[in-house]
Length: 175
Image (cartoon, rainbow, N blue to C red; front, side, top):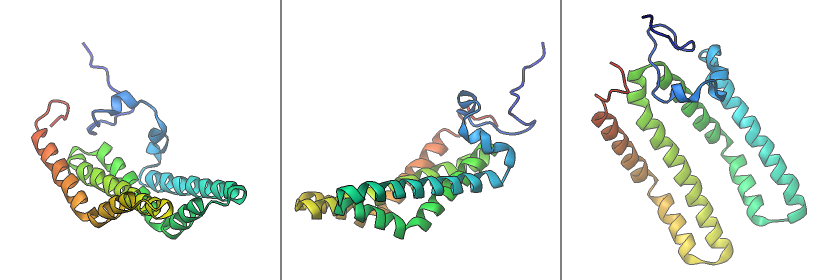
């Protein structure tokens, strides 16, 4: 009996366990482009982010909200960090889908970077919200998150590598 092959999978290429479920999603659109795919995807993400900022500026003309103005100026000031984050995660996902070894190396790092980025944004939002509303507990929580970004990153990174090491012999990951 002939074995049925996945038409997306190239001979000898490792397939991410969740790739079978995803099918031809938005990431697969950039797959045939090769190494330029993640770069193009990151550029598209930044263009969408800039369009959202312009939309917020337009809405803020009517609202005159200091909070929205602060968000826009902060994202504007850190647009290069957003681009580097999009670029790193795009290339990490690209390589993780291509190689089992890259998955085991990059998955924990990618998850830790995403957690760090989310904590950084959350810390900033809580700090600024606490200042605007004069609620010191909210401002303190934001400052606490912002002050502990490195320990948060390291904790998630170590937890990710421990998880990968424990599941190294999992049957879902072919040898």
